[in-house]
Length: 114
Length: 112
Image (cartoon, rainbow over all chains, first blue to last red; front, side, top):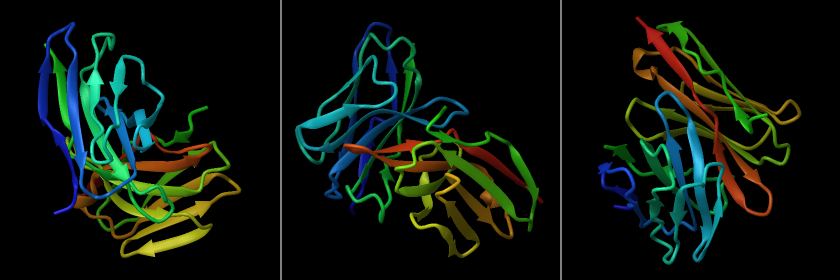
């Protein structure tokens, strides 16, 4: 089945550690996105990528890094520079023609700093 | 000004009533508009998308777009308790590259 997979579902991080969230899609989508969601809030864009080996910062990129070495994969690293990383992280993908199609979401990763 | 704005709610409606959810956006170059439903702790799921002025109907849902007023809305007819969720408006903003921007969402409560 085609879809977008995020792992792990739950992640605990000690302060000062970097952690990497995985996002893989087999939908042959060009575009991939990372969003952060805090309780009772909407989705805020962290990074997005329209094509392999290229990505752009979203509204809250500080303290995060990404790579797009393969079309299928768009991992997000939460660095120690991110001061408040506890949140629900959502990865999405879509074709580049967003007029006619939807963004598909993974099931999310809930990150907690302990 | 936020790129996509929604009233956070909660919007409370009785079962069987029409729920009206509204969204405004700031970028006149926006081309396509999406409504997502998100249950607590889950990922968003698409309800409808629209990119032409006017109305688009799908079952109990109607999306309305007015590009001149930079306004998009979602009507839910015959609201059911299972419709209780947060509804997110998303806008595809096109400059040199596309990016999909979400509003903060409106929480809808449908009471029996």
